[in-house]
Image 1 (cartoon, rainbow, N blue to C red):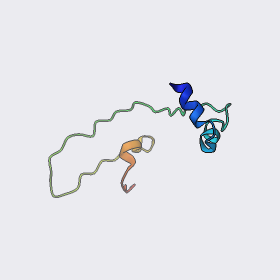
Image 2 (image 1 turned 90 degrees about the horizontal axis):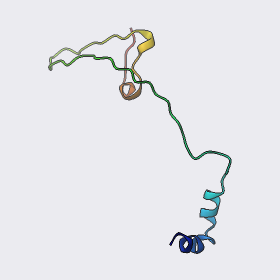
Image 3 (image 1 turned 90 degrees about the vertical axis):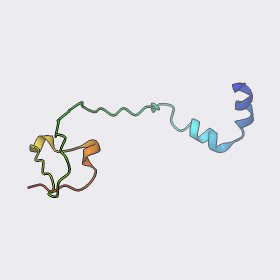
Length: 72
């Protein structure tokens, strides 16, 4: 049972410190994101690179932000 496990762990210093770190701090992290979709397109392969320019306010972020970008 849970009570038996708690009795076994009551002498473990690392568990006591982790549980009693700060009772006033919530154990939740909220990350707000917006749902912005912009269809770039579906293009077949070609020898030249594709270039997609976004307005300054809509610069790639999130998953698209990975990698390197050249701003012109």
